[in-house]
Length: 115
Image: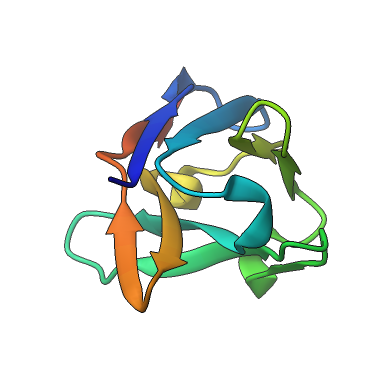
């Protein structure tokens, strides 16, 4: 059974940094592309960043140059380094994988950017 567990969220001031992690189990991790999504109150869930099995990455425009997605295929972890955080980055962040045509999600981790 695929399981994703996010951690690393919290309260940070504007301009600060956070590093999110996602621990994955139940799949051959290195073979799959992985994503970070986020959802703010009253808004739809949006794709933030994606990394392929070959480590190619892409980002939504609003986070380019500030966020970095990475993966560790030995530890089966996905990370999101978030720098220069803005209040509009406030959301619940979710790890995602598409496995056997079904999307799997973790429980999410809350990121709040506020002074």
